[in-house]
Picture 1 (cartoon, helix red, strand yellow):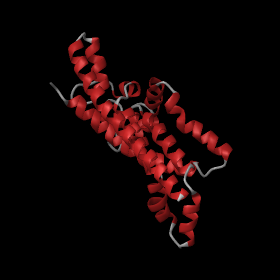
Picture 2: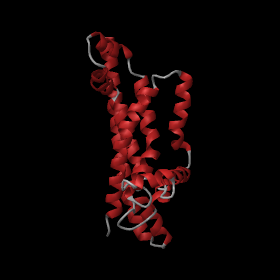
Picture 3: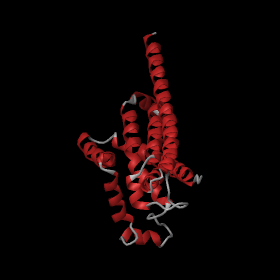
Length: 229
């Protein structure tokens, strides 16, 4: 059994999750500080990949980084190519998974008690120190949950990925595209095996999210009891 689709899917999902982790956090942090109208407009733009069909996202990526498009030709001068390469899968998965990370992180930052940041400023702490040592630990449960959900979404991405990188065994094949290919060639047994593999991974990811949310609930109740004392 060729395990390349599993390895490639995990590689794409992991790299895209790392990308959306940093971009999503900083986008959420700065958007949460904007005025309501501006925040609403930017929020709609950044959340669009969550509601648009994946094939539409794939189309936009093709017309943006395609080999015959200005940006695509420019990137190819530096040896960067996204069409029919696994790197393109990372790009497609990151775009699709970004809203999950962004919205989860933004909710965490908006619920953050700003008096903690003000207290740090009165002590002479830098904004960078306050962000990484005070704000992030306070919001870490929601951020971790967003990261796990983004990873799961990237792992199961099919529409945009299939349009941008297609299906090439040993090069661009993922679990989702492999299942679709095997179903097309009437290999139901092979497709079932990959479906079960994907199901097992997804179940583990969802279990991790539930554990994080449960831990977060325990932490909130503990903090509430401390305040009552």
